[in-house]
Image (cartoon, helix red, strand yellow):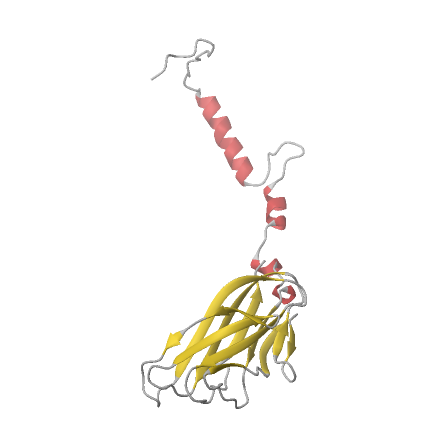
Length: 199
């Protein structure tokens, strides 16, 4: 423990009077009522007006969408196949091609969160299923699932991540299956791509 600093002057604290306490209480009550601020200070009404609340938050300006497979499609046979997403559950400010290229194109640069899932109607014992996201034509995110059930059991492969995208980047959902080709679950419950802008 060091020695006291001789340059510091210690001033004893004396108890306040009853009048001092009353003044302090009045000041606190005045502040809580939104008055009593000096000129140039922000009062509580101004703070309330500038506060960010859910009512002031316009979610219609945030790019997001849910796209899914509605038509019939088979997996590849020991190969990747692009999932032909063809339907929209909702879409805000996302460019979606559900007829030709079956992909999503980014319209605003930033960080996006992606959830994707592919369901196949049956799996062979020991077969491998993998959902993958392709960015601008190249695979860059993928999940693996090892099926242990018999051929009558359906399987799902899913993936979830955040990634930064630039304007005009395009995103596709692909699926790998190591067995003979089987059907892909064609509903928004089974096979979908969900994307939303997060910052």
